[in-house]
Image (cartoon, rainbow, N blue to C red; front, top):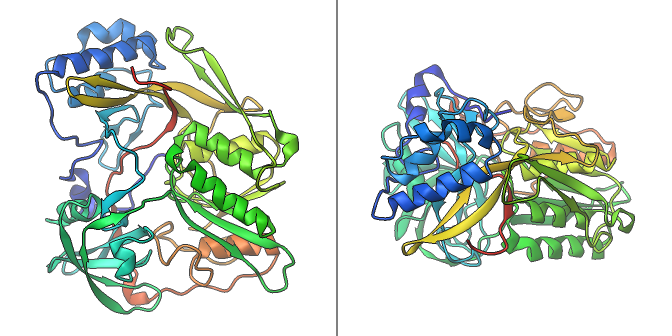
Length: 474
């Protein structure tokens, strides 16, 4: 499944041309190194792109008289065999997974800003007056936003005294998401109690993380401890944090795990191997999680590479896993699901159909002039241990939360955040996951009716992928 925005017809124009910089609307950049960057793009397309056969035929007709950050999508748009590289946006335009962008030399160990991660669905909270709301996806620990009392699921209604409208939502979204100001004054409403709040945030250093929540659920009448882990991106910088969380669960006797990947768009394949290995017992050591297959004419990498589980039995020893997913779950998240199933590990999938991205990138960095560029063309397709790789249309969950299901609980706007991570009283996905594990019914969850949006629009998010990173820079 490709990401499809939930739109009212009257709002489609508003979503079609966001004015913030991003993968589909990059900041223009020519400059003296422009042709060298384009040559770098061409080199890898001709040597490694999964559909390089067509590149070799049509490459001579590519228009190289443009800025480098426009060249790659323009070149890829001239091909017809690469339909799996990207998706069709809600406005009918093509977006590509392959990308090239300026690269930051630092890690994400620390960051300066407000510590707010916004959900990419924007709520229309007052249709008559044209007022929108930004929904908080996550609040990072020890950040200014956490210190101010903000929580996941809060709906921001005003920024620096301005209501959020059709004319300014893209600018204000960017201001919060990219920490592009020194301070922010915000008004917001909480979905779980209907109360209104205000906060003034000042930029400060905080530590971002992809292990956004980890807890242990003790359910009355159930004799096993349930671990709950919300994991938002497969990033190698946080592998140690990920393993530490799973080892802590093991020390506290966790026997069942709910792995929440509902907003995880993918990332490093090595982190997917690390996570899967930490979940499974020692008798899975050395078994294949997946293999990746490249174009037979690829002159840089092996045509086929296999990825084996390592250090199994070192943390949890699970024989089944419950996974929460959504249309934002993609690439490495989908690989975890299909990789486990390829090893005959039962996976109970709860949420909505995943994005459907079974292809990935060999990622390289090159210094051109005084700047490093990260380049990730699609170079391979993924297959699990049974040789299955056909999840390009998405993976359908066992329990769909936007439709009537056996638990009688649904939310038509799922996965729109409603409450903090781990809130068993208000998070329907977590409720259903626990009910599945324990075999108990669930009570309906009610949200404050005044805060239920009349519609939503979608901001395009930067795409991630199944990434294999070069061991050294080019």
